[in-house]
Image (cartoon, rainbow, N blue to C red; front, side, top):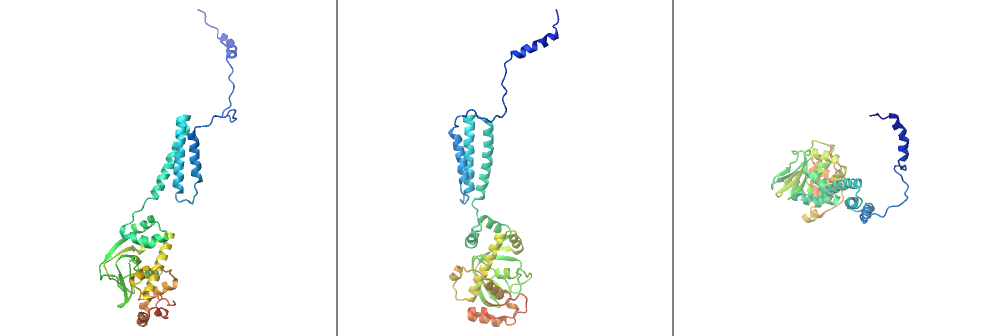
Amino acid sequence: MSTPDPTSFLTMLPTLTSSTPEVPAVEVNATSCQQWEQVNHMLFHLGNLSLLLGLLIPTTLGLHMILLRLLLMTGCSLFIAWATLYRCNLDVMVWNVVFLVVNFMHLFFLLYKRRPIKIDRELRAVYKRMFEPLHVQEALFQRLTGQFCTIQTLKKGQAYAAEDKTSVDERLSILLKGKMKVSYRGHFLHNIYTNSFIDSPEFRSTEMHRGEKFQVTIVAEENCKFLCWSRERLTYFLESDTFLNEVFKYLIGKDITNKLYTLNDPTLSDKAVKKMDRQPSLCSQLSMMQMRNSMASTSDTDDVLNQILRGGSAGSSLPVTAPSDTALPWKC
């Protein structure tokens, strides 16, 4: 048997290559459109319409972000159906599934933020009366009252503060239920009603001076319940929230003003006092702090107090010379 000559295969190659048909070279990623495809299915157009409507929602609408996410999810769902049923295109389907999941997670987060906040029944009246009109959100109010404050009670006749004994640096309180009486050396000054601060003048006047004592006695005239903050922790929290800090400044100033009006006009009835809603002024706040915090430091305190008790608001214009640096001039 003769072995084939290897050189014969080399001579046959040109004939083999010439007999194969020529394949035209195709450019990769050609962009020239010789023929347009037919119009896609209606699902494709509905998906794009949903995306368009989502982008046209005005940002001034309250539910803008929720509606946007819903329309984006609708558009992605329609694209998934179109790519699966009519195009059989895997990459289009996978990308739209990813977009659908991302939008669903964002929608869930938005709905979670808008969930109704459950405020304790005892605090609901305080929120409605004092904080809601100032646009404090329920979630922020819950943070304010849920971490570093307690609800305490006093029976009738028990003292919240005793003059020259109780420190003003420990707490700040709002009366939730009942009524308290404020007196100085046995002389009645004014009452404290529900949904108002108990020690707002002391809180404001001692912001720069610590270690002072109450100059008045505050006693419960009824069974009382009050919301009590730790002053140190409350101050630290307010420093981290500028908006809430301004809200507290307004509320305390307003409360001081209302107390000043009840002090200067003892003929006001309980209902009239509860309905008072006056704008606080610096002058009135200084007068109240002078009355409740600096009265004991004056040499003629008893004379001034007696004139106030006899003459109502006439006493507020009397000049007082106080040796203590905490005393403030009465110039209202």
